[in-house]
Length: 339
Image (tube, rainbow, N blue to C red; front, side, top):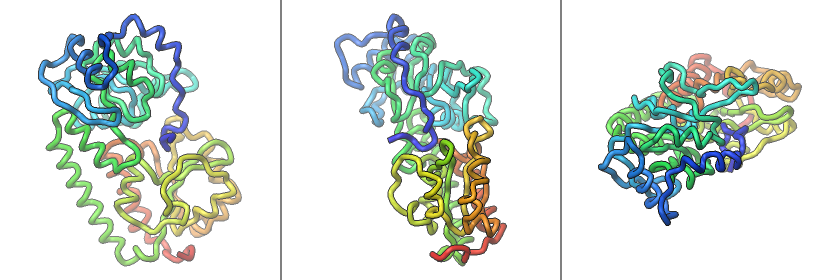
């Protein structure tokens, strides 16, 4: 499955593996996650002697209790949740723009000045990763070079998609010894969900909500699955248009299918702030989108995806803020479409 937000994820460059080979810390004669990770930990200069077993999407790995040199292989799905817990990796992969500009996505408000950039998510520079002498490498389930990482240091791939983000964030808290903080954040999130459900109680059997995001020209995606937005939508349990009440399937829809995603309120996630949504305006101007009942009733809302999408408690809180605004404060008409 291709992750909804990382739909433009580049494929790994196999040439990079050859370049990195001289720097990889080879685990002698072992191919299991535990053995490779343990060998990497022993060879890494900053590795802690004390370890514990951590179960993740690629297996179970012995990881240091007090890692000092964490490298993350993705920004919004590993760097971001660590920063939120007050843990700053020494390096991370991120976004390389079409103009070559390097950036870390979704980390506004956090100091990343000391975080070394080690290449694009999906195809980080393995030589640069190895040069950081990591004692722990953190990625997510779509990383395709796990074996190479695990020869450098204990490596965990935390499952971000296909389960509630709350579970993933609790796992990340446990990984870095911040279980209590993660639990407190979970309790605050659950209280916020309960509060918004109570505010929506008078209309929850009438008001439907659709969440979309743009794709290539003439196409769009469901925006309601995975990470912060998908977890919030599932936990609120709101009425949805029929295609979004079905189990999520990755892939783009053609623009001709957008009427099936109409609802009393339509939310369109906007990633143009990070040069990731060049087709947004064309999508909004399309006659089929303009003709949606939500558009005609001025109940189609563009929401900043960079503020609300990503693996973080703060992203879920930001999306809840937006939903409270468009579903409660603005008092939308719940009879725009027939449920």
